[in-house]
Image 1 (tube, rainbow, N blue to C red):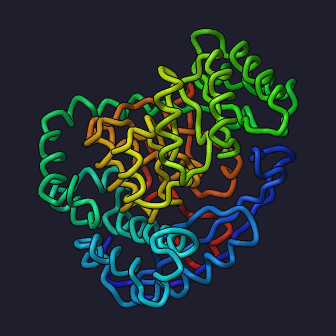
Image 2 (image 1 turned 90 degrees about the horizontal axis):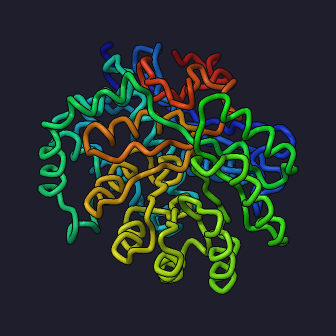
Length: 419
């Protein structure tokens, strides 16, 4: 499919109410899943790239306004030319002199960059007529690295080092490609939302097991710590000794509180404890990582950019990198963080602010091209009905998407002419 240039850019504030209790955690009792959506329409008027960032309420309109301002330089750009050196484009957009002051590289403007970037990658894959995972795998190492902004990482990962990492793994790609037929394993977050009562957690966990899942996550971090501990023991009982369980505190504990709770939760033998304290307190995470071993620390949902990830990696403050292309600066920065994680021999297990739609492509690339361990990908089903091509799971594994693009098109926006 030949696409010459980006002819039109639209921004949409899209919001979805969730079923009672769904999405609830230690902070959000009745969350509203909101998408700040960018659409980049091609010059032929028939195809568009769709990207988005996830927010949880009224702040969505702030991200949409930032998208409107940041995306203007893309109008008239040929998509192939844009993507041939997208690392430079990402850096220029992020360093917008009028908006950088509001970050830099974090918050509203960075979420806007995520939405724009993800739309570029979707349009690019569609222009090639293949799924995003295939578009990435088709690139030579030098072309892949040209998609990335490695600035501020050069002491650990410059362009030559990144190219060499990818080139070194080329001979192993064929054997890893079996994942495309096997499907990528998932874990179910939706069994353990905070406001679900015990009986519902039991019922949903049993249903998930019947559907092929063997890994489950529970929200903790409530004011009633005894409730957290009771529910954690309950999930372990439901999953059985062979099941994998994880606990997510959504940043609610101070370091003393995290020490106390992590020690007690460790008795349930979780694979990880997620976001146990304030996301900016790297040293607290590092201390906990040492103290609760062999239980691991997972975080990344609120690590805002590649530089902060670098600091967490160097400080041994995280074991599982939960990078998210709707929270970082889009697919480009996600891939940058993944390369950096690979250098530190850390697995990337994404947080799915996209409901797994884009990340199902990215984890396939990471496994095949970098050897990232295919542990599992988070599964949250609540927005499935709104996507044109929703992520499909069978036997607890993500089916490999076959449609062109990044699986981001929304049914509600079809009337705007996106195909």
